[in-house]
Image (cartoon, rainbow, N blue to C red; front, side, top):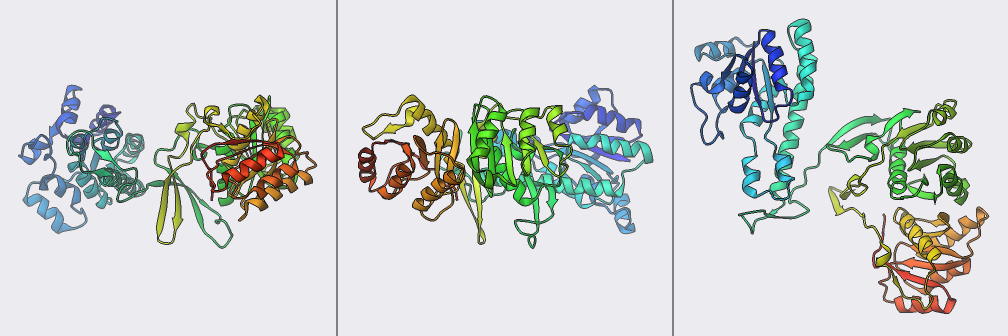
Amino acid sequence: MYALISVSDKTGIVDFARELHALGVHLLSTGGTAKLLAEQGLSVTEVADMTGFPEMLDGRVKTLHPKVHGGLLARRDLPEHMAALRRHNIHTIDILVVNLYPFEATVAKPGCTLEDAIENIDIGGPAMVRSAAKNWKDVAVLTDASQYAGVLGELKASKKVSDATRFALSVAAFNRISQYDGAISNYLSSIEFDRPEGVPRRSDYPAQSNAQFIKLQDLRYGENPHQSAAFYRDLQPAAGSLVTARQLQGKELSYNNIADADAAWECVKSFDAPACVIVKHANPCGVAVGSQPLEAYRKAFQTDPTSAFGGIIAFNRPLDKLAAEAVSKQFVEVLMAPAFSDEALEVFKSKANVRILQIALPADLAGSRNAQDIKRIGSGLLIQSADNHELQRADLRVVSRLQPTAQQLDDLLFAWKVAQYVKSNAIVFCKDGMTLGVGAGQMSRLDSARIASIKAEHAQLSLKGTAVASDAFFPFRDGLDVVVDAGASCVIQPGGSMRDQEVIDAANERGVVMVLTGVRHFRH
């Protein structure tokens, strides 16, 4: 049995090769890998000695040879293939261990030149991997160090690698080649070729987009029972994102559970203070901060107890027993937090269907967010940079005669943060770190304002002295009049309307504070 080893990332390769050698496997290798194995006292044949042809062109050509690819591609069940190997003195290669030049890591470096990128495009490696993966019935191809232990286990147990494992390794190999080629295509088609020397100028949107995702699970159905669905994650998921969640108990997550859970988690992790977010149908129906999770939950639930029924609840602090007991009194579909005390988990043992997800909060919030948003349309995609704008106090422009108090500024910024996660048109009433009325997803901003005030009325909450956030400008003064009539004392909005002055004059006439952000938060 022969194994050809040619790896860029040499993690674990010496130990793996030593185990293969102990099993009687003959080792073939190239360049630096062969040198490393020989230095460790292993008997290894260089590919150049096997082919009788030296490496050339600075290593660009070393394994592109019939003695390599013949040994990988020959079908052992076809006598004519085996006869051809004997005629040309070619050994079968039964195990191929290859990982590719670090193209992705190279182009991720800020100072990467086009020349650096090109030299890190592997040619021989992918060619060998494809040959071995195509001939999976006879060849085991390993493209990642995580595969070493499983293959060794099978070789030690039965002197061979099982059909199922070889096929799985083949699929993984073709997936890796697809990822690699996609990364090369994304990089090269993003280059604006006006600077062939040095670091090239690149577009954020390559001429061809090659997205790669890994399936986490099949789902029972999609948004509706007649739709099929599956759940995928990025190749390299960001820390603190929903796809990194660990489910501690509960039924299998549904398509709608996952979509709503993501909306709740993205919103709650944007707060520094202990916070609770309750989401229903992708919209926050209650958001609050407090001194601890219980206070935050009670305030969030108070916003809209009716909509909270069957909702998704997220905390940005570990959940303790007191908060768990309060949450357990309502019907909840999914509960999320960075951690759960043993006592909190005990509370939910009797509610076995509640899906409990533990997600570690990221140290870097910005790094845990998607860099881009993607929307599927008929036979196409819309790709945009994600709405990750963080409003700072210094960004605010007070346009009313009245100046906001320190408390009003706090309420306005809180309301603005919530509005960023509410479907447009969004109107959000807030006070003292909690939502009091949320109007979402209406065709008219005026209707959103009315619905938000009606929600507060149904929850028996006073809107007197509240702060209101509007995710986009007021096109007329009528929307402002509705929120002021409901009790608002200050308003935050982007501005930018042709009738801004009319709306500002209305704010002065009604005696309320108006603050402009210069940024809108449409969320469709």
